[in-house]
Image (tube, rainbow, N blue to C red; front, side, top):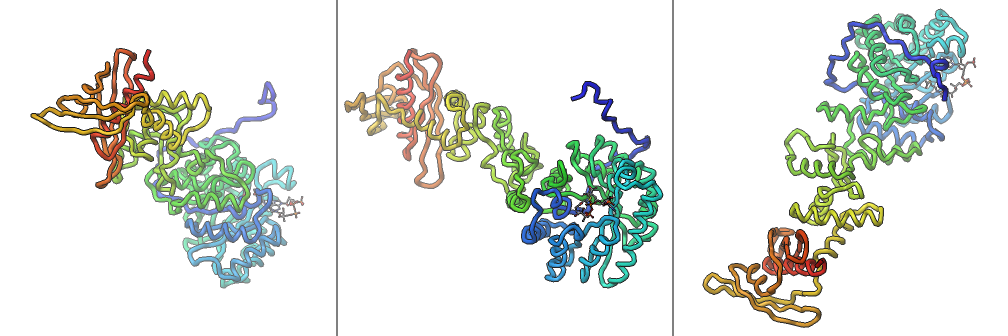
Length: 551
Ligand SMILES: CC(=O)SCCNC(=O)CCNC(=O)[C@H](O)C(C)(C)COP(=O)(O)OP(=O)(O)OC[C@H]1O[C@@H](n2cnc3c(N)ncnc32)[C@H](O)[C@@H]1OP(=O)(O)O
Ligand SMILES: CC(C)C(=O)C(=O)O
């Protein structure tokens, strides 16, 4: 890399728009959406879609709710031309959907484009030519008037060819390609010249589309450019102002949002940001950004995984696991403090509240994702996440101090194996550590009697493989059992809850025990359909663990 990049690259000049209004605007409604997955998205694929894939994608876009879909560059290839014919001849375009096609400002290609649309009920024909100085100089060898002449001549041909097919409801769109690098006064001049030819009317608006063909500035500058055009275009009332951001600096989403604040009525882009180089603006993210601001986007992503898999099939491009809203990991927290806050957030959230679960800007259920993957445990996790998984999948509501104790064991296990632990792995470890702690003392049976509000217990145990029956008395079964055991072990804390519902519900008991022969405390856990038996099992689990942890 250069030590002095300024010798090779220059910064983008700001727009002199000191009374800009867009910073104070709030987006309260969705833009008109135009999907260009089948055109700009398609032209960026290693292998462009075949007719079957194009149809699959078209049907998906219709299902999602797009009303304007750029379906092809008909003069580019027979596949594209045939696809447009197929849609029209097979009557596959719903009445509320308008197809759009793109053509450069070249006579033969414009004629071929109109030919592809023969018999269409409605269509948007989209004309483009590059207008930025480097293109005028290097690509076309044209000065400003020459460039305007190219666009105007093409626009006139649009009028003529449309007149030859009067049964079609035509709408026209013009893009000064590379608008972002075009002088604003020239962009205005060429757009106005094209509008002059088309003479749009309120019931037949023209679309002026401002492409960030290459994103070259911060999004606030793009917003200034859009606001400037919004204010300076003639016939603005008869124009739908559209934007077409690419993502070269990674700001396409911001650019599209600020552009809407600056006056854009319409946004062109692709699902999941497919498109030339770094992609077109991601329409899924834009729509869900609106949704999480409480604005209905008019596009349905309630089964986002289905959309993602189909798009991957058609484009042969994988979606990154961290891709906004859709990636496999975007609703997943591994880190302990995040998991703790999410767990608490879920408990505090009720279904009719404003969504306020920490770290989750969107309820995964709204896009058809389950809560399954929200919390996953690895070496970065803490007690909150572990407790969440055991509660969600096994109905365990672990006392806080047991959470702390068990999370140390989990930490040790993930440190040793270096791998994620699923809920089933956590349960296995929990079972091993607490429920299978049956040595040296194993419970076999008990009998309990109450005499004069004193409990008398007779317990049959196996100690080091030898059967033994012990008797004890106390003011409750736990007290009586501890008396019967006659060990240096105290129960400091006891909790119990049912694991499932109904008459065959099992109970789980948790005890925290202390002893002079260990430092601190340890927990024991027991599960049984009889609540007293569950408590006795929990005490024995605690006792066995103390005996095996003895100093
Ligand atoms: C930013 C965008 O995404 S714009 C859309 C870009 N998409 C595509 O290019 C995909 C489809 N394109 C194609 O299939 C082909 O490029 C075609 C069929 C359109 C044209 O193919 P060819 O005739 O072989 O020309 P080629 O691809 O080399 O295009 C360059 C020529 O078109 C001219 N050209 C480029 N854009 C335009 C335009 N918008 N209007 C008029 N002429 C244009 C160039 O000046 C150049 O002309 P020259 O040959 O006289 O120097
Ligand atoms: C044709 C135009 C709209 C385009 O695709 C671009 O400039 O990126």
